[in-house]
Length: 143
Image (tube, rainbow, N blue to C red; front, side):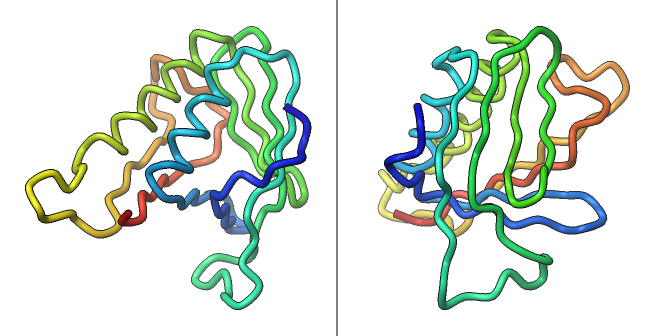
C-alpha cells in the first residue's frame, strides 16, 4: 500500500523511547490487515491531529512504514515515521494482538469500556518482538 488513504490511527512518541498508537476499533482493524498483508514494503500516512497537542508525549508520527523481512518484529521511530518490520509470522502475531484488543469489549452488553489498551514490550525470550523494539501502547478509542 502506498500512502493515499490516511490510516486513522494517531501515533505519538517519546524522545526517550516509547510509542502510543490510538484509534477506533475500525482503524485498528485496518492496521491489523496491513500487518497481515505480507508486502515487502508499504507506507501509509497516519492521522495527525491539528487541534490537539501530543502531551504527555513529545510529538506525532506522520507515516507508517511496514516491511516484511526475516526475524522478529522491530518497532521504531525513524524521524517522523513509525517503522514496523518483521517476518510475516511475527507481524501476524502482532496483528492478532491488535485484533484481540478490538474484540475485548465490543459494547454488546450496552457498556463499552473507554480507552482499552495493551502494552507490547520486549522481555527476555519474547516470542515475536525484537530486543531493539521500542515499547508500544495501543489504545482503542470507544466507537
